[in-house]
Amino acid sequence: MERSNHTVTEFILVGFTTDPVMQLVLFVVFLGVYSLTVVANATLIVLICNDSRLHTPMYFFIGNLSFLDLWYSSVYTPKILLTCISEDKSISFAGCVCQFFFSAGLAYSECYLLAAMAYDRYMAISKPLSYAQAMSIKVCAFLVASSYLGGFINSSIITKRTFALNFCSGNIIDDFFCDLYPLVKLACGRKDGYQTVLYLILCSNVITPTVLILASYQFIIATILRIRSTQGRLKAFSTCSSHLVSVTLYYGSILYIYSRPRSSYSLDTDKIVSTFYTVVFPMLNPMIYSLRNKDVKEALNKLIK
Image (cartoon, rainbow, N blue to C red; front, side, top):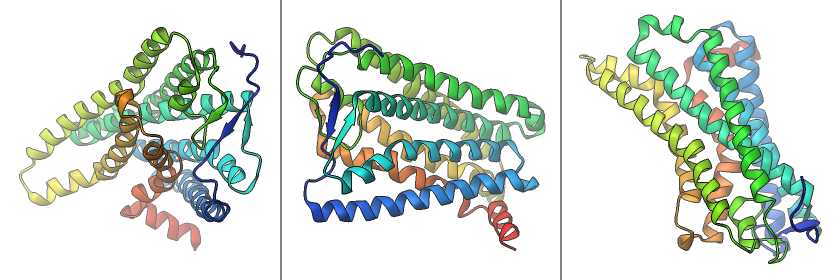
């Protein structure tokens, strides 16, 4: 990628703290979280691939979500761990571009994938008789492939526009990774065109999937309310409760970071929120989808035995 400012060859990641003791504590915490993320997501993927009872559209999407979370966490955490124990806090310009590109692409892809999962739940609850035909393997594969394609196309656009900015305010990023707003803060000159592209990307990758998810759940709730028995309502709701929790946590943190006015931007607060959706959330997802799931528990017991 051609740089608009050739004097910037690397960036310095400030991270969370300069206290050596706290850095060591954070290293242990992040190492534990990352290890659990890898084990939990990899285990869920293996279970879905190996157990024929989990060869359904819902688990097909969950398996892809675990793959995304595994990849997403690996974009950030190894560099965070290295920053915690090393005196060298730098990241090369090319490394920053790659981290930004993959993090944005995976984040946008997950937004689309969660919307596809909402549509899957809508079909399963609202139209159960035509569910098997409507959510065939070809349709599921198309939705997943479209999620990746849409996510990485938009990531290419925002990455190119971001790193074409003139970074004349230094190279120190007050964050633990190459994020959007800290990078824009280093840039100078006119940013009107960039802000327009940013808002379009936000609408395409966050607002639009959010609207689709809300519409799906509107139909789901309407269907559940038409069920006469309380037990039937609870059973129908339980099939989408895990997805609802996942959507709330993920979209809540992303909308908090990227949809607020620039005047309310706070680096310290946003570091905590960013840590949640980049490091903690990929660890929580497999737990959300498996802890109360009888099929996954049985598949795990079968694998262990």
